[in-house]
Amino acid sequence: MKKKSLFAKIYPVLVFGFLYAPIAVLILFSFNSGKSTAIFEGFSFRWYEEVFRDTATLEAFKNTVIVAVVSALVSTVMGTAAAIAINNYKLKWFKQATLTTTNIPMMNPDIVTGISMMLLFVFISALFGKTGTLGFTTLTIAHVTFQLPYVILNVLPKLRQTDIHLSEAAQDLGCTPIQSFFKVVLPQIMPGILSGLMMAFTLSVDDFIISYFVSGTTSQTLPIRIFSMTKKRVTPDMYALSTLIFLAILVLLVISNVITAKSENKKQKQGSKKGGALK
Image (spheres, rainbow, N blue to C red):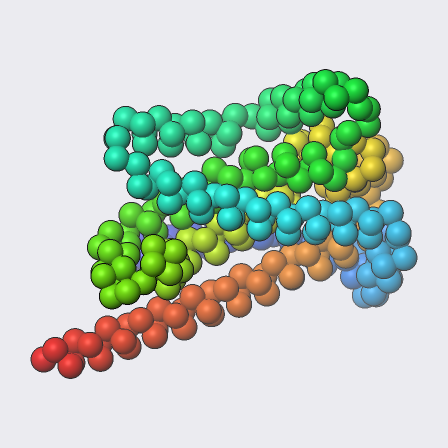
C-alpha cells in the first residue's frame, strides 16, 4: 500500500516534468546573455530587446494574431449555429451522418487538407482568370475550415445538457424564439462556446502545415517564419517570443478558469437559495 501511495505521488510529478521541462528550458535560455543553447552564460534581457527590433518576426506575429482572432470568431459563430442545427435534427441517421462528416477534417492528415485547399483556391482563381490569390483571405478561410469541427464538438455536449423545454417556457412567457435563445439557451451553452473559441484560437496560432500551403508569399505567419529560420539557425530571440506567447496564454487560461469558477459558485448559491425557499 505504501509503495502504491508513493507511486501515486511521484507519477504526477513525472508526467508534469515530462510535459513542462522543454518549456522550462525555453524560458531559462530566453534570458541567456549568449547564443548558446547548452551553456547559460548569464542573465540578460538581450533577446527580449532583439525580438522587438526584428520587423519581419513582428510582422509574422501580427499576421498570426489577426488570422487567429478573425478565424476563431468566425468559426465560433458558424460552429455554434451548426451545433444548434445538428442538435435539432429529428432524423437520427441524418444527425449521425452529419456528425461523421464533421469529424472527417479532424481525422484527416493536415498535409492532405492543406494541399486540397490550395488546389481548390488555385482552381477557383483560375476560373475567374486571376493569379496570386493565395494570401490573407485564403489563409483565414482555411483556418475557419479546420477549426469548425472543434467548435461544434465543444458546443454540442452543452446543448445536450440543456433542458429542451427552457426555450419553450421562455416563449410561453412572452419571448420570441430569438429572444428565448439569447436570454435562456445562450447562457447555458456559453462555457462550451468559450471553450470552442479558445481551442480555435490555439489551433490557429499553432498551425503550420495548412498555413504553409495556403498563405502564399504575402501573409507569412509566425510558425512559417520560424520554419524558414531553421534552414540556418533559430536565433534566441525566438525563445523570448515563445516565452511571451506562453505567458500570455497562461494568463488567459487563469482568467478563464477564475471566471468559470465564479459563475459555477453563483449557480450553486442560487440553487441552494431556491432549495431553501422551496423547503
